[in-house]
Image (cartoon, rainbow, N blue to C red; front, side, top):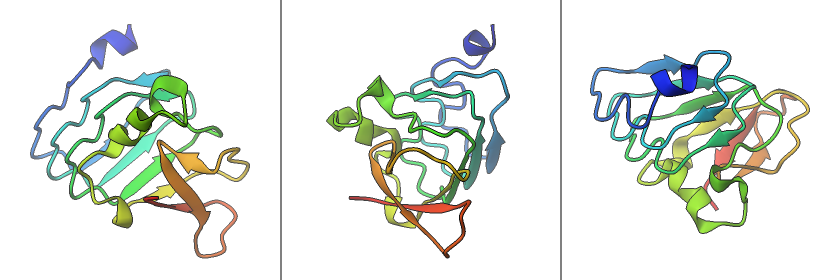
Length: 130
């Protein structure tokens, strides 16, 4: 039921949304969910999310922080080598997005972008475009 309520493009072009905390119980972030949300700066994604679809954050130019609580890359199409994985953050300023992940994160990427340690903390990683 939760997946149906939070369907494709639910916040499409919402210009007032600055932060979003996705609810527990969500297992996938649908395509176009935050498409062109021009004010979105920060999002928190619960650990239960194992898939983030295409163009979820398309043209979210103000996005600076993604807090992901899961331990594995929730890449679109579940294929880290697929060029469509890069489309999750298409038209975003990926050089300036930081993704915070928990200690024990098992992958070196987050939705097609390289993950590298930042600030020497065990609990946070910065995401940089390839």
